Image 1 (tube, rainbow, N blue to C red):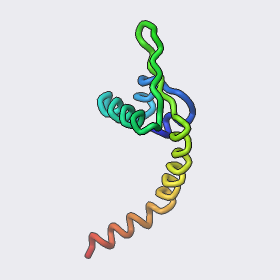
Image 2: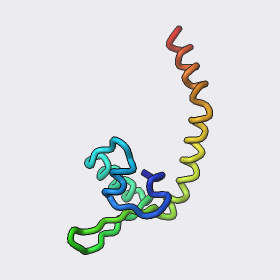
Image 3: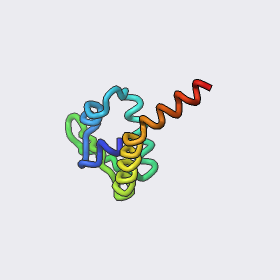
Amino acid sequence: MIAALAGGPQRHSELVRRIAGVSQKMLSQTLRTLERDGLLTRTVTASVPARVDYALTPLGHDLFPMMVAIKTWAETHMDRVFRARAQFDAR
C-alpha cells in the first residue's frame, strides 16, 4: 500500500487495480489502519459520486525508503533463505 502511494495520490479504485488480489474489504481496512497510524491521508471531494483520494503523509514518505531497502534485501537473499529452510526441514 505504501509503495502504491509513493508516486502520488491514488483513488480507491486505482489502488484496487494496482494491488493484485486485494479484496475491497481488506483494502478498506488497511487504508483505515494506515490513516489511523498517520501514514496516509484520506481526502473526500464532494461530487457525484464522491471522490476519495489517498496520499502518503510525510511520515509515510519517511517509511518508504526503508521498505524499499527491506524488499531489496529480501530479493538479494531469498536463495539463502530457501536453502536454510530446506536444511532446517531436512533435519
